[in-house]
Image (cartoon, rainbow, N blue to C red; front, side, top):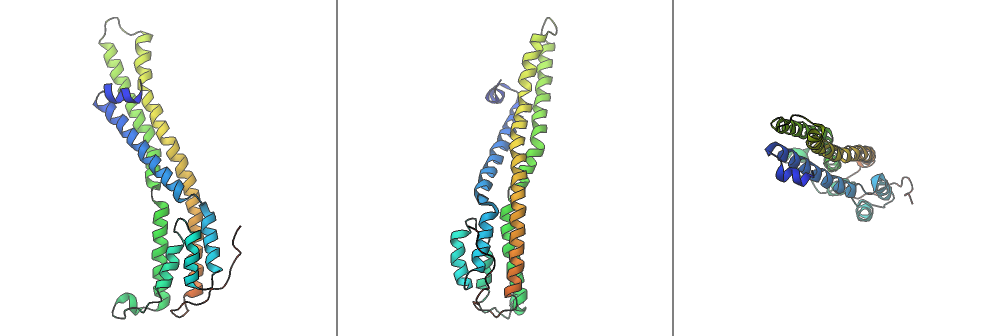
Length: 232
């Protein structure tokens, strides 16, 4: 029995379980493909973007260079926020009344949190699918076996191996479907989690260095000191 047959010929519980597993599979694969595109450069793009920033002559030049290196737009928002900080703040507001170093800390924190939210998005769904899909499939299997045995019990002639093997084997498809949904989600969660952790470490280090380099500077486009060479 195929999944399509389960959806069309099964009872309400079997159809609901199969439909739920199908929905979980589609959702997890959408997230997997989207995150694979977002993290396609891994930490390489982030490292190149940070190196390009420190090799720039000014914040404006750095912002222009990052547009070609930072394809996932993870480093550029922090630089853009720092560049816009040069505008004269409104002293009548609480945000404008604080010192520039504190305002710089706030905008860097906001930019870093926004980038981390993008990196972490979808991870909860992958973890949920990987943890629950096998049990959803097992529920469909248990229900299918129960229905099969109930139907066989009502037939004349009692139990025989040929009457039991077919319905039970068909019900076990739900367990296989649950595993097929869970395994890619678990693998993607582990792989993406490792890449995201590395990118987070790079972004946090960059924000710390940026705060230390510009925290006490006046609100203008100051030259930036060069750092490590850009990777090839």
